[in-house]
Length: 174
Image 1 (tube, rainbow, N blue to C red):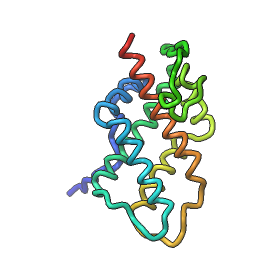
Image 2: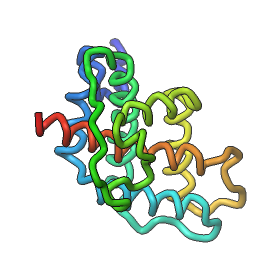
Image 3: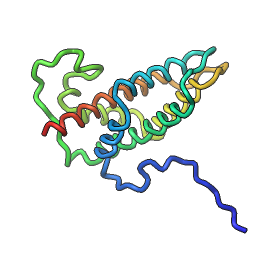
């Protein structure tokens, strides 16, 4: 009798073509609210850096968030691979600092710069490692803190979420 193994690896995006990063981002924002995602990312990050506490969220919510963020990172990478087809430069008219968020004025004009900068510093595997480590350390009490700097990838993730939302928003206005 043959043993059948179940592949527990995420299948999000595996059957799709690699050039549909924008579609994957649209789907991500249809299923996840920007502010709720940023709040959960912030909460997970703060619990990951605390030694004597763990997150009170349901583990299934955390697992869904983990998988969604992994697919978001891949969609972001696919988006910069096909950037020649997709130009989002806009002129900056009186924008309030609240609308900019963590983005600079140049990044607000061209959100693809955020993704280029993030993937210049970190690879997809390093972002996966960051997301997995952040979730792992937030779900339990551990003696040791993560061995790598978790702040820089966290800032990149927040900026990528803002930039992706800007791209989707501007695409809908066209």
